[in-house]
Length: 237
Image (cartoon, rainbow, N blue to C red; front, side, top):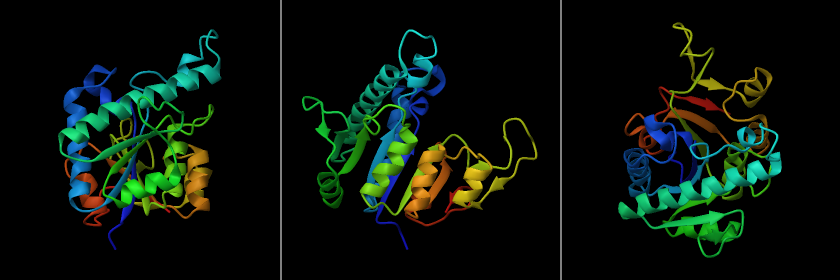
């Protein structure tokens, strides 16, 4: 059965393209086009973006000058920048979009309210969830799983630069094999970095499937979500 509602999570680094920093216009245009394909198919879509193309809280705090809490707050603000950029790109494609932030900033976007987010989705609006969970020491992976649970998504899509989860690093080992299916316990026990452990545990508690796929394969999101074709990707359940 085609999922009615999904949450798509992708990293901020993806927006930087080959430059490694900032927002590459062609990349965000491509991502917006992929998400548009879901809207056309009637899939209610929530989105979470990381902020690593601008700053990562952990990295910012490693020099000893910036405290981890402040570094994480900086990272949360970076996700808001990315969310606004993606909103503009999606609206350019004719989509109706709302940005909801876990940190109040009414002049820029809505504050996250679960019921309001669900109503937006029911009305056919894409909702971008920004500023993580609003708390330091939690990653955007955890924020994505939390929001997916709150909006009662049918699955969470972890969009990456690789096809899915491998038994070893495919960039280092020629014989690396794609794992089409693995359990939450497998991912936690073997420390397979599908998402961080907190997000996987939360997904397990709520029986939320995690699909890991290559976001840079054109049409992949629609193939997985609309067509139900999970070949060439991994699912954690």
